[in-house]
Image (cartoon, rainbow, N blue to C red; front, side, top):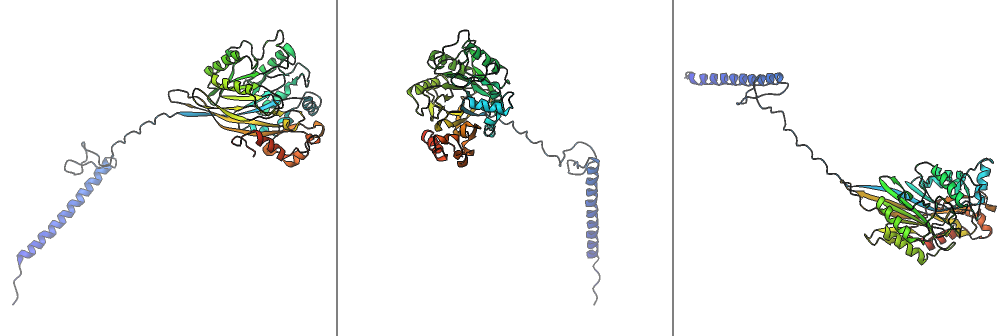
Length: 429
C-alpha cells in the first residue's frame, strides 16, 4: 500500500537549500566588499569595528607593521696606529764608491744609484727608514775620502730615492771640513724634500734642535749623539755642533723634552770601539739612562761591525725598549770580512688612542735583524749592497775580499750573524 508523501520533509530540504544559497551569496558579497576596500585604499583593507570592509572612515591597518626600534649607535672604539721602522748602519763613502759613481755618470756629476739598487725593494715595506750618514754631504767641497770625508750630494739623493728619510749626521767625521763643512752640509740638507729629517747637529739645544715628523698618526722625535770627533774640536765660528755622549746633562734635557713633545723618541749614538763585536759597560750605562729619560728605541753605530740586539726594561712602566748596540756598515769600501756584514734593525712602533683622544705609551714590537752584505769584485770594483736573503755562494765566491779572506762564504757570514745576534731577532731568509 503506497504511503502518502510527507510534506514536512520536503519543506525542510527546501529551506536548507535556500539557506545555503543565501550563505554563499553573503560570503561573496563580503569578499567583494573587502576587495573593493583594498582597491580604494591603496591595497590596504580597512575594517570597521565588526570586521566589515569599509569604504572610508578611520580604521587600523592590518597590513602595516609597527615601526622598528632604531639600531643603537655603536660605541666608539680605541684605534691603534702603527709605524713600520727600519735603521741601517754606516753609509761610509770611500773614494772607491764616489769614483765609480763619477764614471757611471759619464764624468759629469755622480750616479750613486747602483749602490742601493739591489736593496731598495726591501725598504719599500717600511714607513720610516733611518741611515747613519757617516760622511759630510754637500755640493761645495770636492769629494774626499778617509781620513777627512766629503761626499757629493748625489749620494744622499740616491739614498733618498731608495727610500731613506732619516739621515743621522752626528759622528766622528762631522767636523772633517771645519766650520765651512758644517755650514755646507746644513745648507744641503735644508734643500732636500720636506719629509727628510736630519738629527745630530745642534744650534741652541732647544726644541728646534729636536727634529720630528708625524707618520700614520704617530709623532716621532729623533736625536743623535757621538762619542768623539776624531780629536777635532768644535770649529771656531761653526753654526752648529754635535753633542758628545759624555755630555749627559744636555742629553738628559733633550731626551726628556723630546718625550714631552712626541709620542716616540728614537735616539742614535755613535759610540765605543771600532772593529769590536763586544758591547762595553759604557754603552750599557748610557743606554739605561736614555731609556730612563724617555728613549723608546736606541740605534748604535761606529764599530763598523755588528753587535747584538737586546731589550732594556723601562723602569717607570716596564715597557721593553729595543737597543741595537751596533748595526755595522751598510755600505763601505772597507777590507775586513766582518766589516762587510751589517744588519737592518726593524721594529713596529704602535700606539693606541682612546675615543676621548687619550694617547697611550707607544709599544715597540716585531723587533728583527735583517742582514745586509757589502759586495765588490777584485780591486774594490762595482761596490754595491745586497740583502743577505738574496746573497748566494756564487756571489761570495766572486767577492774581492777573498784575496785576503778566502773563507768568506755564506757559512762564514751565517756564523758571524748567529754568534752575535740572538735567534729571536735574526732573520736569514
